[in-house]
Structure formats: structure tokens, C-alpha cells
Length: 166
Ligand code: NI
Image 1: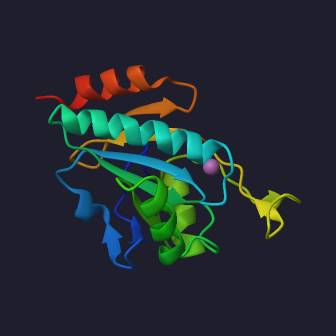
Image 2: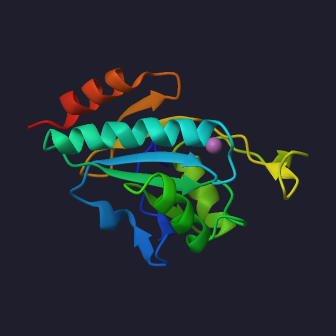
């Protein structure tokens, strides 16, 4: 039982190149993890643009962070779909998908709520409203902090900088 969000031993997903990944692959890295789905029309584009800008700023300051985008819509978000989406819009991010069961486990580890509902404006007729929080995970896989969608870019940048700098 994980008491705080983090990369658990059961974390086992597929990246947007089709390679299997576990928590071990991110050992020693600071990770920024955000959940969403590529058909998301408003929240994900806004959050991913903001987080990408934060990551670029940190990189410019010599602070390395690995941003991950975990789908809550694994049936549509195959590795290929995520790769195309991220390559065009948010190239720093690595997309992660997996079986419905594997995604459920990761959602539970991070207390992410996302449930499919009808959406007549979507080409497939559904959307997956989701928790819009980014989580910062330290090099040991353990939770450091989280940033709600409402938090502005400068504040997220300064907080991460403070947590991961030397
Ligand atoms: Ni979204």
C-alpha cells in the first residue's frame, strides 16, 4: 500500500516508442508526471504547454527533469497515437500507456480520478475527464510535491527549482 503518490513496484507501462518501462527506468531522475488523454481539447493542451515551458526553463538553468504523460484513455492512446501527439506539440514529454489494468494501478498509486463519459463533440463519442495535477517524483521514486492546473508557471518553476537544485 502506497501512502503517498509515487512510482510503485507495480508500475509497468509502455512508452511511446513501444518499449516497456518500470519504475527502475526512472531511478536517479527527477520525474514530472501528468495524466490525461490525447483527445482532451482544453485541459491537457493547456497543462502540457505550461509544463513543457517549465521543463525548458529548468533545462536552461541546468536542472534536468523527465516529464511523463500517462494516458487515462489507453484504448485510444496507443504508443503510436501518443508519439504523434507529443512529437507535434510537446516533444520533451515521454508518453506512457498500457493495459487497462496497468493504467488503473498507476492511477490508484497517484490518486488520479478519470472516468469515461459521453461527449457528443468527440469523434468517438466520449471523453475522459481527469484530475489535472502534475506530480514531482524524486530520484528514489518518492513523491516530492504536486502542482494543480490552476498554479501559474513561475510558481511551479520556482518550487521545482527549490526542490531539485543541489
Ligand atoms: Ni486532459
